Length: 202
Ligand SMILES: [Zn+2]
Image 1 (cartoon, rainbow, N blue to C red):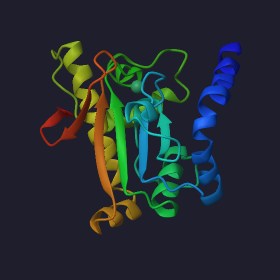
Image 2: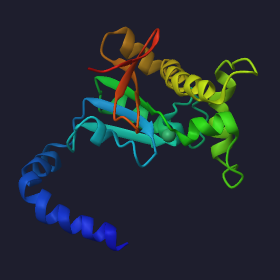
Image 3: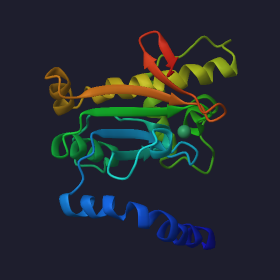
């Protein structure tokens, strides 16, 4: 716990004096983020760090794999879908960014199976993606399988976004962009997903 409180004290001493005007404005006028990010919960892939963003800029949902489920308004507990609804319908963000990453434990679980201790929730969550993504031949190498699912999980999330009627409508009206990215923890390089696959941002 000490490391967290030391971090907080550093924030108060070193960050707050320079930033308190920004926070004051955000408190007074509310938040108006233009970008909604859905990213993996992985501690190494922080959207605010990767995009060099400041408080107030990004509305963020993080979950295992950075995965977006299909539209399913069934009264159950859909945390990620609730973030999408609030971001798109209330905050009226201009873009949704899906941020996947290399070395993802969620993607690894799709290839190797979930850890035995994490079958209550992780397993069905990742199975949702695995069921929707076409597999590869049995003799595909382990690395190729990981790369395949790394790519396709971002593509699937973008497809699922359009199953939300108010997202599809906003995209159709030219009011909302949907973008997919992958961050590589080894190299720090960000790739954007295009039809042909990931292309590095220059
Ligand atoms: Zn991950």
